[in-house]
Structure formats: C-alpha cells, structure tokens
Image 1 (cartoon, rainbow, N blue to C red):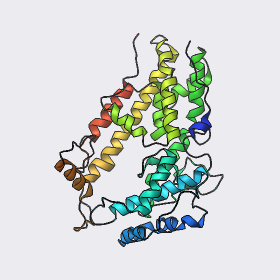
Image 2 (tube, helix red, strand yellow; image 1 turned 90 degrees about the horizontal axis):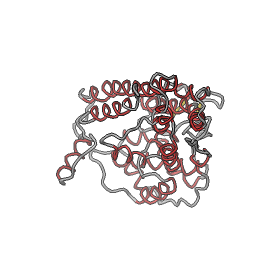
Image 3 (cartoon, rainbow, N blue to C red; image 1 turned 90 degrees about the vertical axis):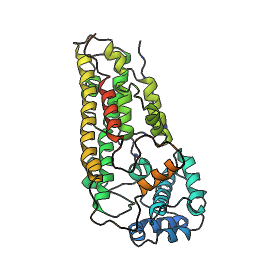
Image 4 (cartoon, rainbow, N blue to C red; image 1 turned 120 degrees about the vertical axis):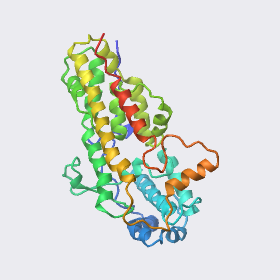
Length: 357
C-alpha cells in the first residue's frame, strides 16, 4: 500500500492560502530605529546607484548587531535589505568590488545563517519577501495589486519583473491542498477522489519552489545530467522550503500510483496530461527566455556607458584566467549553454509520461 505523509505545513513555512509566500505580507520597514540606517539607504537606492554614491554610503554605515531582530519577519526584512545593499555595493561602480565592508558582511552572514540561506540576492530576497499588497482584500494573483518594497532601479519594469513571480506564487498556492489530497487518494487507492483528479489535470504553470513542488509530487523529475546543478539550486531556497521539497521527493506516490493503472485508464490519462502540461509550461518558458534574454542580449544598449565594463564577461575572463572551469552556462555572452539546459530539463519532465504498459 502506498503511503501519504502526515504533513504539518507550518514547520515548512508553507501556507494553504499563500503557498510559499508568507501567510502575512512581509514587513515594509523594520520598526526598530536601530536598523533605519539600512532602511534609509535602500529607500533611496536607485538614486545612490545612479549618482555613484552607493559605495560611500555603505562604507559609512555602522556595524549593526542582529541581536535586536526577534521575529521571523524581522529577520527576513533584514536579509532583504542586506542583499540589496551588498549587490548595489558590489556592482555600483565601473568595476565590481571583491571585498565587502564589515558593515554589510558581518550582519549579513548572521542573518543568512539564521534563515538557512546564502548571503546573496536570492529569490526569497527579491521576490518572496519583497512585496506589499495595495489592499488587504486585494487579489494577490493580480500583479496590479502588488508592489515592491525595495528596488535597484525604481522602475516599473523591475517591479513587474519581480511581482509577476509573486502573483504566480499566489496562484500556485491553490495546488498545495490538492497535492496533499492526491497523495492521500493514491495511498488509499481512491482513483475516483475529486481532488486527485483535479490535481492531476491542473495546468501546473508556476515557478520556483511551487514549480519544484509540483514536479516532485507528480514524480516528473527523473534526474537529468545536470542534477547536481538543480540540487544546488535548493540551497538558494529558505531552509523550510528546501525541506518541504525533500519531503515531497520522499513521499511522492503519484507516479507510482498512475503507473499501477493500465495505459488507457482514466488515472494514467490524467497523469500523462498533467506531465505534458508541465512540459508545455517549459516550452513557453524557453520561448520567453529566447525572446527576452537571448535575443535582447544580442542587442546593443542605446545608453552604453563606455567607462563601465561588461561585468559578466569580466568575471568569466578572470575565472578562466585562474584556470577555473566555468560551468552551468553562466557566461556573459547572452545565452551560451542556457537553451540546451532548459531543453534538457523540459525533455526530462515530459519523459515521465508513459503511454504504454
């Protein structure tokens, strides 16, 4: 008999209502004035970056203790602030900085350790914990109702780039209870349970932890050649979310249950349809990446600053100069290895479907 996990979502920081987003919107500002030096710079970050004053502002910061951070929302806000300050400091000049001042590095390491995250601008910092809702009754699945609390540029383009992901996370939240009910339905051999069928037939078009959780539950993740890279990406998720995905990988019984039915059965048909829906999502993702990253990277910027080096190319060149292998398609040439990697991931997802006995 297949087993379904007895899941307590709170310990994974996952909500039936908001999914991987906080159940209450993130703090827009740390209330303790002790941390306002961080808040003040981030509030005016676009101006500091444009005027090239960000490095001086950061270097003049005091080294603040993390002892006054108590609740999780405060730790998350501190993480967001320090992530923005760090990346603005590193990239806010003609050349990237190799060394961080202790005013950033000391508290950032402590905050990151508390949240089980690396000290950098992760998806949690830029998206999950960086949004506000226009009204407490507003629909969070509509990006029009969301806005950022921190920004590098202060532009609508950046805001929408981030808030579209938040809206998708909010939309994906409705799949979590369906996932858990589908687990239970499979464990008790209930092929007729409505929730199980609804889950299998959902168009699972979501990203990040939500997308990963969907694939784990469907078993649509036979490891590709670059599994190590995919597993490494888990380390850039909050610790509780990472453990949720690990639990999903261990507990997932959907594919095994679907494969226990004949190829032409309603359960197998529903499973295959769900897997192919994930594959179609990845097809759409490849098209978006091609249009807005690959093609855009080949276009010459209209406002190129001659004094500012191509930081990605510069970093790649320096690593190669140190005889370090640059892997994972992380080059500054606008797409090397990127599309083959995405296509491999898509093909792996689709390969989980099985139409014959």
